[in-house]
Length: 256
Image (tube, rainbow, N blue to C red):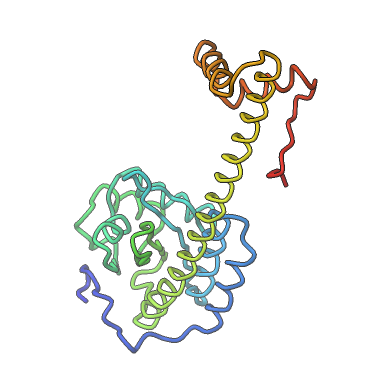
């Protein structure tokens, strides 16, 4: 690894084992209410793990959403501000690491000649060195740990190896959180679909009884009303039931 170049992550089996961090990440998966909370806690743990006496490390997490980078989590307000600063320029070491999926170290920003506008702004904010470590999420998303130090050469070889090991373990936990979230969203979507179908069926039955017509005719009446009023079919069906029962909230077997 050159002074201003990319690291290929070649620590191999020399990466430290972080069993305590692994257990902490498991706790985060179980305790976090959503992805945002998990990532914020993750950033705090990373900053704490990598900070040393006289060299506090700030940590942010950036992800690519809709082809745009977003600062989604941070160890504190300053880390979030630094991530937003880089995203505002649209380029920098962390975004480069994210796009190339390669760890990147800038040991001394003052001597760095890439990303000149961003580097000047970061130096003015007191940043002296940056370490960016992408997280391999197996195609489910793209994310990078953004680590900032106020010291030149703020990341030792041991610190870099620890950051890589941490990112690897964190990626596994984040993939699990993403999958849990996806399953939860799919379950909620299914419940909503089943509830909507039930309400529509109830409305069709009511229209059939009131108009002494077939199911197809009743469904046609419902869909025509939906189209004419430019209102969702479920809402029209709920209005039909409410007009008959006087209830504004229609309960189903799928409500919790």
